[in-house]
Every structure is written in structure tokens, then in C-alpha cells.
Length: 236
Image 1: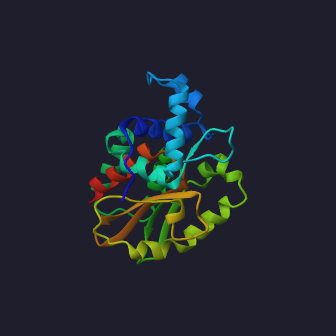
Image 2: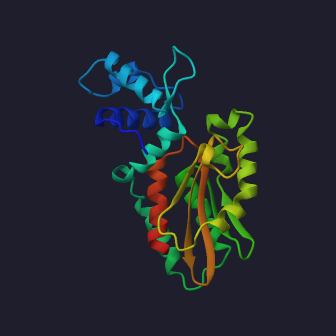
Image 3: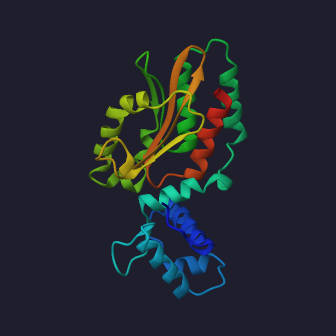
């Protein structure tokens, strides 16, 4: 059973998540007071953030520091992001619809498609054909730009997840109509607590295909959830 949180707490949680995704640093009550017109004081914001921390939606590693989202906070944000999802740009939409219209797309065409999608999403991107053991991947360069990439465990986590990805894909029903989102400690590899995954099966004639994004928990969910849902809608 989910904890009940007030609309004010939800607004504060959303702002913490959104700003932490953008800035990659703990968010303080003073920062929120300065950047948002809540109509109440920093002390009130601090008290609400303290309650959100007690409920497990936020984490605070030092008494004097700001707070960051927990896995639970990210999940709440993703579940409530429906009205905030970003539409894909026209260029990406036309790229996807044009690709879908190809009568006989070559597997090599997926190299270009994967490259364009990873450029937009700014995370690791893959189109996988498990039956044919074909995997089109791009986006390592964007992960290297993230501050998380400097953490010693980050690349070990990436390696662990990608090595187990085929098993994860096989466990997902291929008629799924909405993207699967896996965050932090829910990832299949226990060592991947700092990563998030957004993926879904798509239909390409007689070939089973699986599209997924993999990046730090601090990825842009509003953009990438919108991207994943556009891909599902166009291809399925």
C-alpha cells in the first residue's frame, strides 16, 4: 500500500526530482524557495522535505546537505509523469514513421536509427533481435558525459545489466503495450542500483524486436517515457 502524500508534498517531490535530474546535485529547501513560487517559507518546505525523507521518497546523506530522490521517489515521479511527458520532436517522429513505412528494412538500417534515437535520448540505446542474436547499440559516449560515470561501480553495473539483458527480454511478454520501467534496486542485476531501464517489445514484420534505453537513475524520464511510448504507438 502506497503512502498518502499531499498535493504540496507531491509538488515538492516533483521539483526535487526534476532539478536533481537537471543539476546532478542535492536539492535544498532554500533552492526550491528561490526557484518556485510556493507561497510559503523555506522552513515549511524543509519540514515537508523531512516528511518525504521519513516516508522514503527522498534521501539525505549529510545533515547539512540537500536531498536527492530515492528509488521510491523516482518510481512515484514516473507513475505520475503521464501529464508531463514530452512529445518527440517532429524530426524524430518523421524518422520513426518513415522507418515503419519501409517495406523491407535492412538490419543495417537499424544502425542509423539507433544512432539518432540515442542522440535524442542521451542514454544507451538498443534495438535487439533475440531470435537472430542481433543487437544494434549506441550511446556509450553520452553515458561517459554523466557525472555518475566517474563512480567506480558505474561501468561494472552497466556491464552486469547488458550481460543479463537477453534473459530480461525473454521474460517480458511481447504483446506488452506500454514501456516497462525498472529503477535502481529493481534491476535484474543486483549490482545495478544506480541505473534505470525503459524498454518495450515492438513489431517488425516477422521479427521479434526489443527496444530499450539504459542510463543513470537521473535520466530524463519525461523525455524518454514520451519517446518509448511514441515508438510503441508507431511500430505496434
